[in-house]
Image 1 (cartoon, protein in one colour):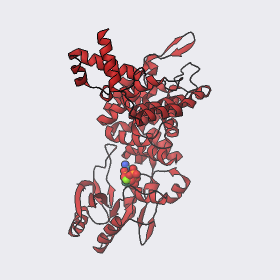
Image 2 (image 1 turned 90 degrees about the vertical axis):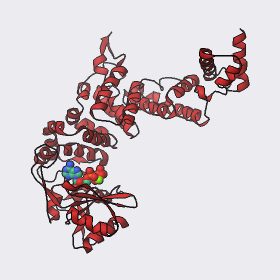
Image 3 (image 1 turned 120 degrees about the vertical axis):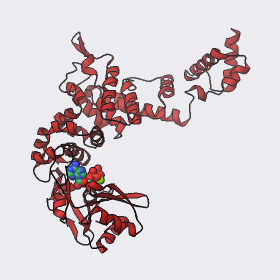
Image 4 (image 1 turned 135 degrees about the vertical axis):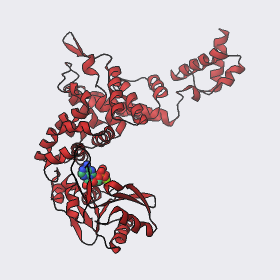
Length: 445
Ligand code: ATP
Ligand code: MG
């Protein structure tokens, strides 16, 4: 394992001052997995004040971000490095944070308070790996295992339950049996966790390459934080279109959209309104109007879990329009242009991805519709690339041109709409001469 120069420098500085110091946690795990770590975190026997003074006098910017939990942040070339003093945690009474922390000189005590064996390893460039709980073996075996007694560790801090699921989903690991059992039994403690934290972990989980396996295998835990999903579980749709219940269908859809937060959340929530809209007619199930109910429930989730405004808006729009059925049959070019004008290129391509995932998660007999995916994607990309006229602003004439023809007020907007309609339908080329002639002719009719 080779450290980049910045954490190596931090280690040298603290060590020269007489304190033991290591890189620790996620960066050790990711390096051992052969991945480039995003952040390098350090742990040290120095107290936060000591570490702060040492680095400060070496000319490094230090922010005393989490002093009471023993963390400071050093900034080198605009990048932040968290340095946490070795600590052991006092009692936990709120299922999230220790009531007190105690600094210690002992690295092993610090590693023992960490959540999973794969996250409880430290590394020093000269002395190598410190791995008292078998983290490296669990990494090789692909196992998420609590450090210590799982039931106690989850009762102390219930966020660890979601972190276990998140690491399993992103790394493709199994959750060790005792750890999984304890997570299941401790799930109600998740109600004590701040909604933002729940959201962050769920979003990372959903973007994991093994998200759908985890959503299915640990559904009771998911329902503890997303109770809106519980009615989908086991809900039979009574239609030849579907071979899964609504919850399974949603999880399979998650797996088939690209791993961006908006698409993954939209795939999970798109049918959340189905049970409320469901009725049987002639032996077949229907759920007309469910996107509107899905939107209401989606907004409830977004608000409770404190999604950013941008993410809320993206998920909202995707859920609202998830029934475009772009793959159903030949989509007329005019319809694509109209949709492009309405939603914009980015969103329309995302809606197409969601449509594709929806089909992937339906009955295998219906998969033939996927053949339409590539041609439609290409058609949309081409319309975007050639800047095809799909909005009033893209017309080759503007309001001034029409005023010169004597149009006023409401007539102006109506005329522009009419021209856009003609262009989108392919009945007029988007060229000034043709557009002006068309308006003059219709005025003289
Ligand atoms: P990533 O940053 O890739 O999401 P990470 O493992 O670095 O993963 P962080 O949240 O940055 O996760 O935490 C850094 C380290 O702190 C972890 O590797 C783990 O050792 C410890 N840790 C984080 N959260 C907890 C927790 N809730 N309980 C116990 N230890 C934790
Ligand atoms: Mg980290």
